[in-house]
Length: 344
Ligand SMILES: [Zn+2]
Image 1 (tube, protein in one colour):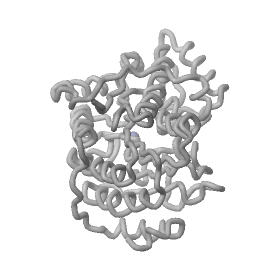
Image 2 (cartoon, rainbow, N blue to C red):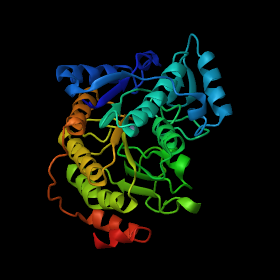
Image 3 (tube, protein in one colour):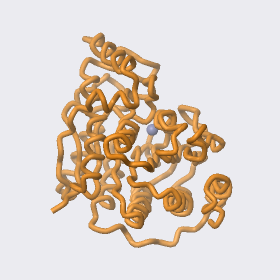
Image 4 (cartoon, rainbow, N blue to C red):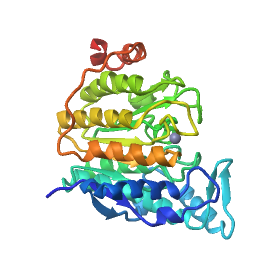
């Protein structure tokens, strides 16, 4: 029987830089919650290390070596990369496993061994640009996994939806000029890292394949559901990806200390439902990769809410989601590059 997969590794717990919101207890909180639900029937898989070849398809070898050397130098005290990104010696192994888990997830999805899955490792990845670690992130796990889907599986179109409350500047940078990855980011605006305005639509051959959906502080379940169901889903149908990956941060939760978006657990479940319906309609697999989320209770509950929907045998039934003005404006704006959106 094909079962959804949950990828993890104990190395995620060793990346411990002291008092920091992106901390090992995040993984513990998620796993305690899932254990209470008997892991929702998921098969637990140990994340392998990413191979050098796969990692360097996104991050130059010199950058990877630099991260390794920084980690080696971080014994016995953490070394800072920027004002909020630190490493210890064990961070390198954790980072290799975090990227490796996302890559393994892609392999399991595309080989047909798993219908859906979640890579639950840290450090997170979506702020790490090809040659720059930042924002708690060392390697861009989901970008490495998406590139792997193109290189090793011969895919031509991957949709990466990033609903972490912060703009996924790393993933955006990795695929800014590529039509092979449609990168869609919903993020609070303005907020760290300051990139991802609606006007940034990609560059060169990738023009139109970067979609930023900035959301003002205070936006919540209704606005997010409308953007997903009325903008992202039609966009996905127009792009026809062969794989859907979700940068699943949970810091847009109303209880999160780092941002001011008001999503609830059921909001995250609804977003997951939209993506599962889209995947079912396209007959492609969908997987999620952990990004942020810093209130432990909200993180654990929201992850479980997502995974309830992700691991269910069938996607939830479609619901009527009102087109809010922000979604109407976004669709009108995107219609320049995506004519199908003119009909929204
Ligand atoms: Zn975040």
